[in-house]
Image (cartoon, rainbow, N blue to C red; front, side, top):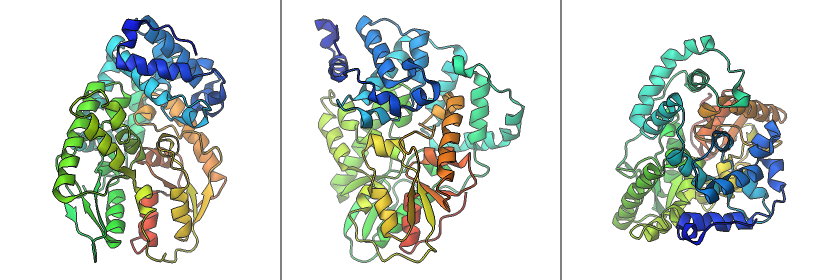
Length: 439
């Protein structure tokens, strides 16, 4: 694709990167076939190719984004299926991230939308506030049925009431007790074979602390010491995808500092992540801070240490599997895992080797509609994608559904009665841990 940036614009490292990405695009359109919003809406501007044209024009002209541009960029899930499909290696992720930052900086949203996004950016990365908000949302759930449907959502942005209704619908019926605090260390059982930090997460430690507990159980059982690093923050993924670049980078720097301090004190073989959406961003710290003189090298070190839990566990010799009646598991491949991190086979192979009957889900490349805060900000599209995903899962008639991302788990569970569990919970059970609880 031909670009027309000025030399002055290209002096900006972000614009120079955008120019490189745009020039790699050859207009082939392969990405449209795997883009969830294009599949649903059939609008070229709701495809990666269409958004690339919009972003190109917005960046080249360096003018405030229009309402039309914002609408189509907001509808992007950042599922990154287009990057898996693209034969030219176009890094759409870095391009759309840059577009979101520009929109946040140069576009004035309606007041109610600004307020909602500010609340999400403030509450979600803070587990204490998020827990309190979930308690309030649980009390308000009976009111969700009284809120009106949004018949005009397809033509523009959903209304505030529609988004509030979506938030209430996502709130769990009950909250589990909090998990262990940062600073906790879980010693290896028997001879120590390794030492890892385990990302504590934000929403996950409130909604499902059992996931990290299963990871701790499995790892320590197999000789791995696990540390929950004190003063660790949200990884920055949530605010990063909202275009709040300053907040996301500040959190990245804070985490890099405490993780590398921990590595220097006690040694770390890896920083393990059980939420693949977080893992994709942490593995991108090196790029995000590439121009930071003080943090570029430390960020690259942290990105190299970051591993999805299934990546790391694949390198362990797990204990013999326990019998569990040949349960059929529908494996949902989270977009951030299969497209963002290119991890496709390891989770399924681990489950199969440990006694489960693993079934692929039709249209597994299509997003379930969770995508961080997407199921709140674009609830109607999100529900359509969820229902499509659940219908595809139903065709394999599973006993359980396994996934590697808490957002996907909550999203899918909202549309099915089949228990949705994390891959690591099944692996913990298979190697001597408790049976995963039902949703």
